[in-house]
Length: 232
Image 1 (cartoon, rainbow, N blue to C red):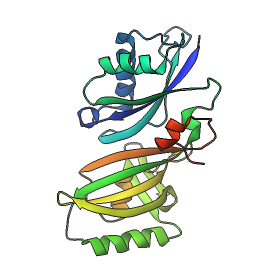
Image 2 (cartoon, rainbow, N blue to C red; image 1 turned 60 degrees about the horizontal axis):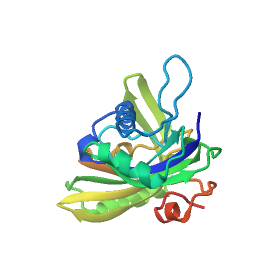
Image 3 (cartoon, rainbow, N blue to C red; image 1 turned 45 degrees about the vertical axis):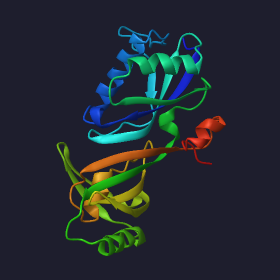
């Protein structure tokens, strides 16, 4: 039985960036069980802890502001939850903020709108001015048809429709950096490495998801607004 819903902001760092979303869920389950927290379980033949992640994080991508809702069977102070869970967290999983939210609020997935990324790649023959021009052309286009080969076949779609904004960041360690805000909702999801390819860039060396942008309909407290998780 659900008695409480805690919203947790966390970071998935370098040590865990190559695990799948399913493995990340299992990591959370083990961590919370070891912490002795009163988890709420699903019904059925194979009950499992009720966790709800805002957005799956692709393998190989670092997440600096990921969000998960944890449902508890007994009320627990957020501060106690944070301390207990943090003690059991493996390297590469850092808990940043815990806040109680209403049990009746919409799911995190239904509130997702955009995800922001920083994409880093080795500096090639293309200079900053040429890359800035390529970004400007991309953003000025009404549509850009793109094909992505997958195991189940080739996906064809308008990649321009998945990008709200994009710009260059200062270079770091001789690597070019591009900031992107990509669509991420229940209908479509933009992939940072695909946008980089559409710009004619080499394969990214590092991708960091820096922020999840959700609809501002939830009565989140001021701490969450300062954390940059909601937009009006």
